[in-house]
Image (cartoon, rainbow, N blue to C red; front, top):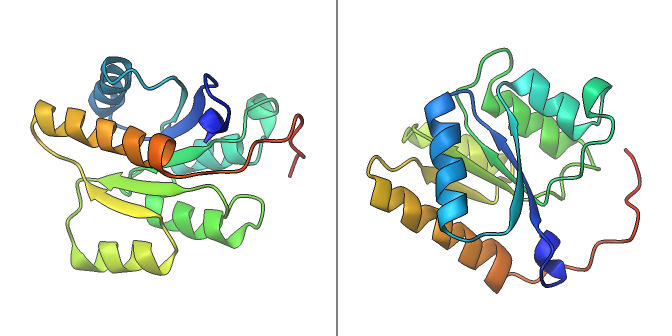
Length: 155
């Protein structure tokens, strides 16, 4: 995470096509006091352009954490997760699948593709708050990551 050094924001990439879910995630992050730079991609193709720093995303930061919905237009989250894991420069980024799917096959497939965590989207707002706080506690407070180099190599 970017909070490798105290006070530095986390670079989060939320890959989500539902504007309401994007808004709720933004609100929860604001309320949870997680210092972050939230970037949003609304489909799988835009997400890969961001991750590979292509086109308008040539100056995009490397995310510290990816929050990935499985049900996306253009290229779904399952394909996207496979692409991320197949790319050595992206495979090291922790991916949390955050989706409405509770299908056993989706959970197993995501685990086979080395997602770091699979979470089903809660329905209640207090559950979403608890989820965001848990993500902050686990990925920022509990886990230890090496400091980022001053300049990151481009893929």
